[in-house]
Amino acid sequence: MPKAIDINTVLNTLTPLRNRDLDTSEEEASAAFANLHSFNNGAVFTGSFDGVSQWERHRGGDELVHILKGETSLTILSAKSEDILNLKEGMMTVVPQGCWHRFHAPDGVTVLTVTPQPTDHSTEKDPR
Image 1 (cartoon, rainbow, N blue to C red):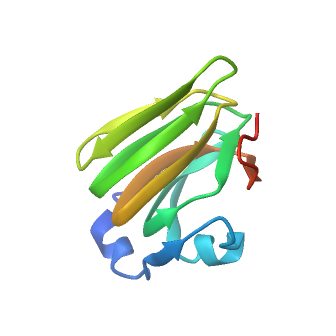
Image 2 (tube, rainbow, N blue to C red):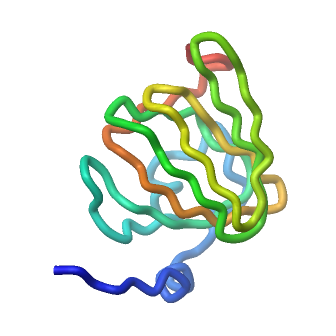
């Protein structure tokens, strides 16, 4: 059954992840995010953080990334290129299936993502 979800109410229940870095555990990161609803082979998530995320990729499909507040640089690695997108509040992008990507948000960002599962993580300099 369809339902309305108040994203701001959910965000107010979360504690933003501060100083995210390559050593931040999956458990620490997941505590700053909420699963809003299942969607196809994944879910819709929201959360806030500052710092740098580990590399991640989604072999099950494309990921939609929407910036609700703040800004981030999103680096996307394909087999042939490295693209850096500077995303601000109100902007969005789609990360192609299987592409490694990571966020760099020194001043903080709040995101809404539609993320297919499973998610692979890497702390390698270049996980390709």
